[in-house]
Amino acid sequence: MLRWFKQLDRILRGDATRLEQLQQGQIEFSVGGVVLVTVVLAMIYGVCMGAFAMIRTSGEAYMQLIASTVKFPLLFFLTLVVTFPSLYVFNALIGSRLSAGSALRLMTAAIGVMMAVAASLGPIVVFFSVSTTSYHFMSLLNVVACTVAGLLGLAFLLRTLHRLVLIQTYEEEKPYIPTNNTLPPESAPAPVEEQMDSTPQEKPLPASALDFMGPQPIPRVSRVFKTWVLVFALVGAQMSWILRPFIGNPAQPFTWFRERESNFFMAVFKALQSLLN
Amino acid sequence: MAAFLLKIDGILRGRESLDDSGSTLRRILMLWLLMCLFGITYGAVMGSYGPQTGPRGWQMVFSGVKVPLLLLATFFLSLPSFFVLNTIAGLRDDFGAVMRALAATQAGLTIVLASFAPLTWLWYASWGDYRAATLFNALMFGLASLSAQRLLSRYYHPLIQRRPRHRFLMWTWLIIYSFVGIQMGWILRPFIGDPNSPTQFFRSGAWGNAYVQLFNTFWSLVGG
Image: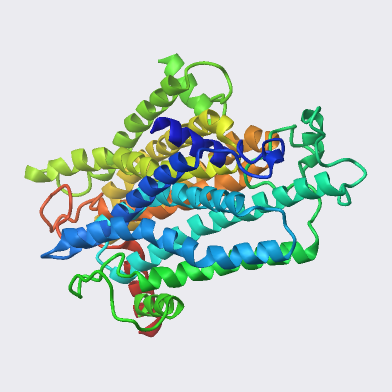
């Protein structure tokens, strides 16, 4: 278990996504282990989310806790299932050499980053769950926590995609390499890192997982990647609405799923409105 | 005693060095010890409002415990997310130094508070109004927080020079910490203790959300 956490830690630190590491065209990590750790982290956040219902509702309060614990990992799995086919097809259409396997690996790593951030926000969510009576405040706090986690995960995804493309173009035709040689030649990676850092006073450091390196990819490619990310975010948001309740309104009885009505963004707007009134 | 005073002086001047190789954990524990000491001092003075007869005397003890509790609990709730954010930003290697900076700032905050304790005592001795006492204490906490923020910038300065990204993370910490801290302060009430209410550690029915309360107060002020 600890070994797998270390694998995820390598991804978080950016060790797994250095240019030298990506030479094979994919991120190297043990998929099974990281998936398992990711599910565990997602369940931890699910528990934190369900804590509000556990404290505020009478009766079958623990059911909501169990439901949230199960549904939160499910949310990300289903979002991946729904978005992956179209993402992959567009990826192939624009001529990226990213194979289905390495695209899936990449998505696993990105979701791993999201869950690590979400689980680390868990203690704050539990603290507010325990001390707050307002249901709307809790739903908004959870939306904010998940948004932060999601954005960081997707930023990781974009940056890593960019690096993968950079390596491919370097290997294939070398058209995007500027004169000062931004991409490290395999033999001497160390001195080039210096030039990659955007700010001059920064000492040569290994780049983090979120650093942007090298030249901009062709606008067409980067536009497709950005659409990828947007689609993933929108599907994730709506999926969370379909799978609701996660927090459990104390005024309503427990159900596994609620009636089909409204959508995620309307609901957030309404929660904000009723909090302000 | 002289060494002790020098140590405190060092903390306030930002001399608590972040990079020397001594045991980080020992240094942090030392700083927390100082924080508890000064926090209890100010808390006890804060709780000395009103007549000190009967169960009322307990308020000093309660408030004394609550000030370090407030700071430490907020710290530990905010720490996991800050750790993960530092890792993603590629700043994990500096985390020991960051922890020292945070602990030194917390110690600094309580030292500033403790230096205000005589003022609070004078205020209590001069004016008896409960609401005025609350406001005065809020003002003291506000001033101490501002000083602590300056102190944190001072401790972060070498880190930021080495890696400018630390500046962003410092502000992230301040946002997370104050977001949790305000709510923590709210649920740990009463710190001063209304003399007309019974003395207790937690005020019954005091739970609730500081931000929701704030919105409500704001709307009732605006809407009339």
